[in-house]
Amino acid sequence: MATPLPWSHSSLEGFTTCPRQYEEIKVLHNFQDQKNPASLWGDRFHRAAEIYIKMRVQGFAEATLPNDMVQYADYLSQFINRPGRTFAEQQYALTRQLTPCEFFDKTVWARGIIDVLTLDGARAQVDDHKTGKNRKKDMQQLIIFALLTFYHHPEIEVVDTAFHWIQLKAKDTETFHRHQIPDLWGYLADKLRRYRDAFHAGVFPPRPSGLCRAYCAVTSCEFHGRGAR
Image (cartoon, rainbow, N blue to C red; front, side, top):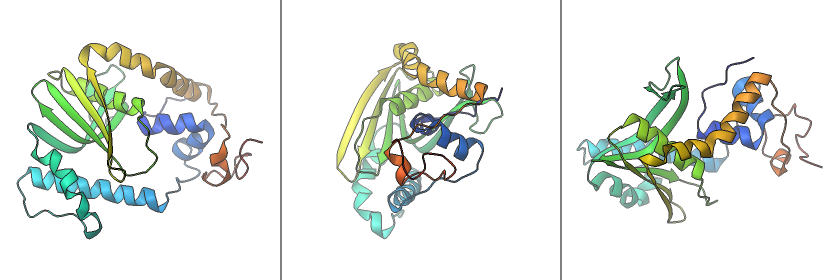
């Protein structure tokens, strides 16, 4: 019986999309994720935004963005100028006992990275940069962000979350209250149980879909290149 790897939103999503792919890439390391130009640009944007916000918050007015991202300066300024204490790319983790711990602590159970976090009294604002064009309000990710914030900051009673679709100039929001914590865990319970059970049983079945035809790096899978037929 294997101990489950620490989970995050992305690991739960990857496992749900295809347990076999998740095992081969994240557990066994037999293959590597394939990144396309859009995802590589997204990584660059997140890094540039992190540096820009951190420097501006610290008072370095000369901080600039890369030439191909200067059009997003106004978008990022909303986080820099709002009341409260603002942090960029904030790493949070929890133990199985729901105690805050270091991101790479040996007892870590759950992890998450918040693109922008602002703490202002009993209220927190959590913001996530979305660089793609496939708009989807993913409640799972917002719930995980809220839970991590509640556990790491006991003074916070309300968490306002937002996805910012920077290329679409759109925004999706959701607000969570501390008294909802049991319900938020309830929302995640089924996925967490299936994730745990796969490790305990050592069984990660394939979940064929259209993604198998051209977007999966696991060439050893019987569905690679053809999907469900």
